Length: 245
Image (cartoon, rainbow, N blue to C red; front, side, top):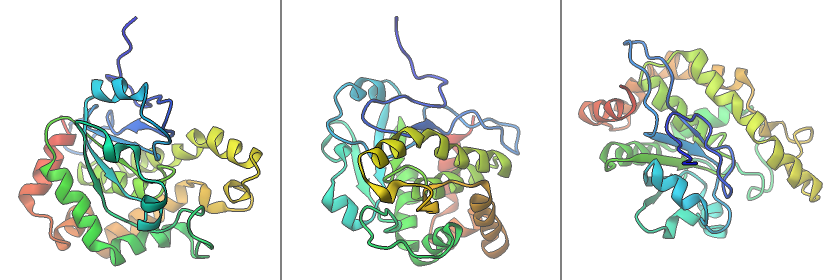
């Protein structure tokens, strides 16, 4: 039986968790976000192995690593040396509890806003790279594929005119898909991955709602924000064409 990922929202990979496609969401203009254009996931752990064929089928051509500089140095992404893939690294925030001794006590949505305000050059780097990407899919990942990945996904979906409740739903499902990983970590004695002790591991709808409120009220929306950090109209239109049918 031929296994295809076409039209699949969740992409089961053996070496990467929380992997899913941004396709299938209705847009304000009447279109629907396309499958096989943008893939979001957590860090690939270990060799690519059997995932290679699955990703080549999509096909993934560009990978953007959003992890902090410390994380990317300590555990390099498997995609960095993968043949046929153009790999880029832009640090959006050092918020992975495994690499940061103490995650700031601020609410998660405020950390997301910090990315918009304090890491503008890197957010711009991500979107310049997306606009210039060759044919095929752009895969973007952080560590768990939830926070920094969630920010980029929210900006992309928002730019395409996807309804805010779909953006919130896309964000919150990370918590469900991460359960197996988090439970395994805790069973292995790694307490920082215990949700009861570290609420930052959750992806609550209210977190994305507050972030989207900020994006609308303080930045004038995704397009206005991205233009303010140097992404051109031509680049933004190219990104939307990539994403929307």
